[in-house]
Length: 561
Image (cartoon, rainbow, N blue to C red):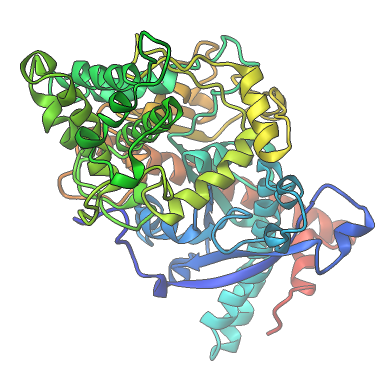
């Protein structure tokens, strides 16, 4: 096992950057969809480890890119690289970038004369999956033949034999994805089973939408974050109570005085313990609420990134968080029992500042937090991706979320679908299709699904919205169909997808071992099934004078030899 962080994998020099022209709208046949200038965009993808491709039993591991620059996943997804070794599967790696993210940007994105709604109209999961299906066909019918051509450039006879054996239909495909990418990997297998033979989905909250039975718990994510603040989650025993006290104290100072007016001194009093810059001293109750949400984000992301070693993944590769960053924040001011009683209410606010410091001040370069005047994210990459994800939330990824300050450590934020819709209309000019995700992907009704392994970790807040043995109320999981769930007691957000290390915990090793076992099985089953079918098909074709699909493809190959 290699000791390395998740974002320090093989260099991009082991990959080849490629571009694929994709339709903006795969589901329309109107004349506008054929306009080369406005009806298409260039999708970025990487072909990696082509030298590993086993032409006798060809396989492709396809990463269904999610809401970030695809290079993040190329570097971070060690599970794919290690599983694709010749000793394991001999697979070609394909990392596809999600439309509108990274460099896969349609021209309309930057057209200021268009409304935000029109600029992002085709940023949907359905269109992204269609991109991936179209790209996968391209990889099998164009890219792999080019790899064969290059591999045997000076061996004409070997090249001819390789092309004689190669059949795109025999390429086994396994989709991989984490978080939203894990949802896409699951849905890719669900919607395109003729293209995708299996999927490995890490921390995929596929059961987080309206319309499901039993109903989704809007507080589930907040409860997951709160778990990380407890001794059960590995934090100092006093952390949960002190964090709860911090949010309570912050919101208390936003309340008007007894005479009905805002207490300017009271509002400003949070500046010192929260380490705010002079330009971000709150002047209104709304400023306090904005601060509260900003601080809450730090808790959320540190919980997702509560990995057992230093890592840059949660920061989009731009900066590094310490090992177990949530516990690191809990180990400061929050670690002291009876904190407020001993050191006063400002100490509770300092607890919140400690979490902000670990997350936002990862570089240790910020003398203070200028929250109210600058980009609120930890860096520009995170902020840009969050904006695009908000569009997806407001259009079709409408996940109900809430916090109550009772079961969780935060403050009351009841789920209000009406208000959520109003905000989406105000921000984007679009009203969410609240039930669409459940309608198009089935929610908990996944009995027709097979060959998918879904992993979750106890330290990951999203795990309570994913597929686990404990949440499978409709008995969807079925080992006989290859539909399984693995659980990591010490795992944060898709920890099993990262590079293996000498100090990995047993649950991480076991998860990866089971995932590898299933992937190998799916690949073998595909090749065995198609070998039997091909032998019978080709024999029947010759007997009846028909040209088989394999022969047809060879005669129309896009690479000559």
